Length: 330
Image 1 (tube, rainbow, N blue to C red):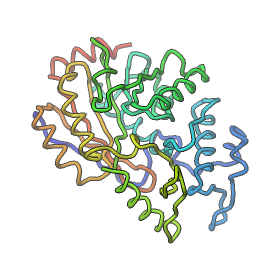
Image 2: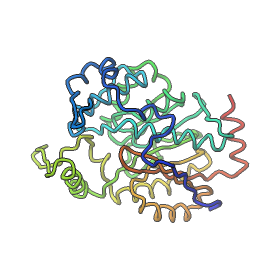
Image 3: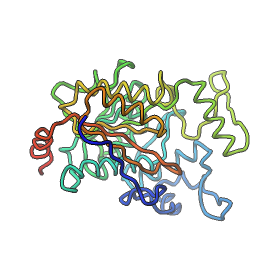
Image 4: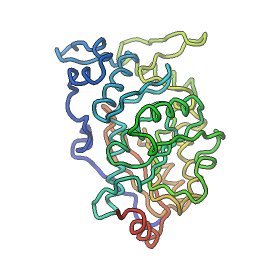
């Protein structure tokens, strides 16, 4: 593996990316104008400021709908009950740092427009990464998911917003044991892949972690009865493939790395979020084993905590020059 693993550290780790429009405190009056159903969830917090109850999944969903409308021009956005409803600022940060990653190889100029193609692995029902990435940089997106309901919901969002038509598409991954195979078409190239991988190793592990976090928020374990079983009430939601898998985060990304070898000359940068820093070491080992030529780890804020993504590439110097000259020149 050529080159050293590099880190991009931030002066203030809890600050969002400088281009992230969500750095300022939410203006709830403006957001409610964009999406009136948010009004019923606005309340004063203990500091006397307007806010919403972030432990209420309906409030989080209404806030997301307002943010996507106000900042990204998405007139229609909805997801089925129980599906992952992610925080928009953190998702936007990933996109902006990916833009910087490309710019670093392009004399600090961000490649923009439809010539840049991005694969969102596990797009979910919310379609947030493609929305932000296309509206901010004009990139084309393909989202993949193993869940037919998620794919259908994304498709509805795309068809309901003219700004996304012909620039964002979704594909069903029919083999849950595969990541790229089956959705990556022959001869297709991507400038970036991105992924927010399943974090937990099992439903039991997720339940314990959720209860631990909930005790920190509410001072007690909060459960709600779903499908005849006691499950933690998650304000962000999430279905099984979105939240856990065999081997958890490390196992999923390791499988992705190994599978990426077969697509190494058709992708500029593969990337994935890594929630826990201690998971980096085993991932670095896998990257070394498969012969990745470049590896980078980029630190960034994800809400109130520090997160990061790992990026890897198999391209040689001559391939990088050809790629930039032929695909990034407008």
